[in-house]
Image (cartoon, rainbow, N blue to C red):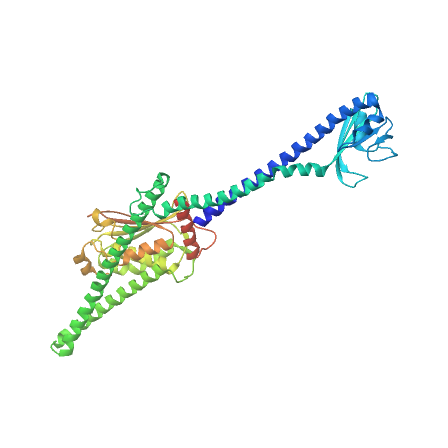
Length: 461
C-alpha cells in the first residue's frame, strides 16, 4: 500500500513539475522572442532617423550585430550590410510585403545567405522605403541558457518531492496498519470511524452467526445421535430377547413387527438426512421443468387419503391448474411432507385443505391448512429446524423423523420461494409457500444462486 501511494503521489508531482517546466520555458521563449522583435523595432526607428540625415553612409557606419537591409518602394535592395553590391528584389518576402501594406512586418524563416533560421523585422519609413533588421534564432536560444539554473532547481524539487512522497505515504499507511479492529474508536483518522464501526458491526454479526451455527451443529449432532440411537436400541433389545429364546411363541410375531417398525423408522430417518444433505450441498443437477402444482397436490392427497380416512380427516383441494418451474421430485416431497404433517398433527374428524392461487403480481401461492392441535407462538420460529419437536411425547406416538418441515424449507429455498406459518393452539396451522411468477426459460440451480448473490450484492451496496 505504501508503494502504491508513493508511486501515485510521486507521479502526480512529476506530472505537475513537467507541466510547469513546459509552461515556464514556453513563456520564457515567447518573452525573449517578443523582446527581440521589440529591440529590432526600436533599432529600425533609429536607423530610419539616421537614413534621413546621412543616407547610406549612415548605415555603413553602423556595423553592429544585426543584419540591416534597406529596400526601396519597389522591393529593390538599396543597401545590405552583408553584401558589397546588393542585387535582387525582396518584395516576395512576407515581412517586406507586409511592411509595404501595413507599415511593419515580421517573419521567422531560413536565411537565403546563411541557411540559418532567422527572425526578420521590416518597417516602412516615411519616404516609402523599407528598413529590415534580422537576428538568428540561435541568439534567442542562447538567451534561454540563462535560465539553466532553474532546471537544476526543478531537479532538486523532484528529488525532494520523491522523499516527501515516501514519507507522506508512510504517515498515511502506518496509522491504518496500526488500527485495532477490536477497539475501532482508537484511531488517528476520525474519518475512518464510520467504516470501522461498520466493520465491527459486521464482525459481531458474523461472530453471532458462527456461534448460532455452531449451536445448531451441536444440537443437530445431539438430536441425530438420539434419533438414530432410539430405534437402534429398540431393535437391539428385541433382537437380543429373541436370540436368547426367552420370548414366548405368541410374542415372537409381535417382536418381529416391532423390529420391522423401528427399522422402517430408522430407514426413513436416514433417507431424510440424506435428502437434507443433498439439498445443503446442492451438487446434484435435477431436471427443471414445468410442474402443475394443482395436479401434483391432487396426486399427493390421493396417496394420503387412506391414512386420513382412518382418522376421519377430510382432505380438500381448491384452485385450478397452475404451472411453475421447478424440480418435480423435490416439489412432490415438499407437498407430501406438508400434507402428511397436517394429517399427523390433526384431530379426529378434522380437515386438511390445500389451496393453489395466483397472486396479482403473478406469484403462485401453495397453502396447506389444517384444523389440528396448532403450534404455540414461542415454537413457531423453530419448527423448521432439524429434529425440532413441539411435543416430543406426542411426536413419538405418531411417528415421523422430525425433519419434514426442514425439508420443506430447503426445497422452498431451492426454488427461490418464501415460507410463512400461521398457527394458534387448538385452532390449527396454515403453512404457505409463495413461488416467484412463472418464467419463460427454465433456470438451473446455479443460475438461481447467481441471481441471489447479485441481489445480495446490490442490497449491500
